[in-house]
Length: 165
Image 1 (cartoon, rainbow, N blue to C red):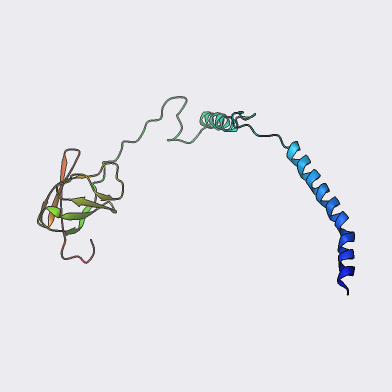
Image 2 (cartoon, one colour):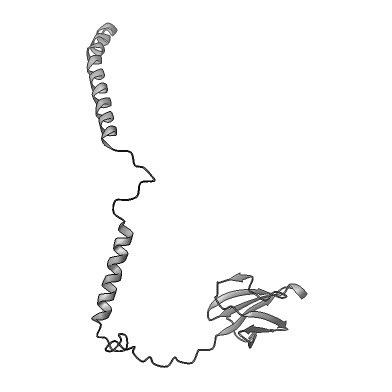
């Protein structure tokens, strides 16, 4: 095939390409004009969050008025008598490790399964799990640790005989 013939064929297709390009641009422009610009300062037409919260509150109030579960629901509008609270269970405090030198001793404690690291000279834990009422380190005496929480002293010692803390 001669190069001139190829050029003539492509020139015949050129007008159609232009028509398609103009039509595509017109469709795109019409779509852009049809969508209104969203103003960030414009509040929502329906405050959905407040509507849902209001419905949940109404549903909870209706459920409480129809409640018939003994011990949970108030009997005839009166408050149900509650069972006495059981005595608090003492914390399980175990010394996992004591390491370091002189004033730089570090103590790893397991308090109810949560690992806390204390440093000699600092009362609060320096690392470990966040505990709301953490013990305060009073002293490190050899293989034992003295702790305090709410005017209650606790003494925990290393158990060299057990393989795990």
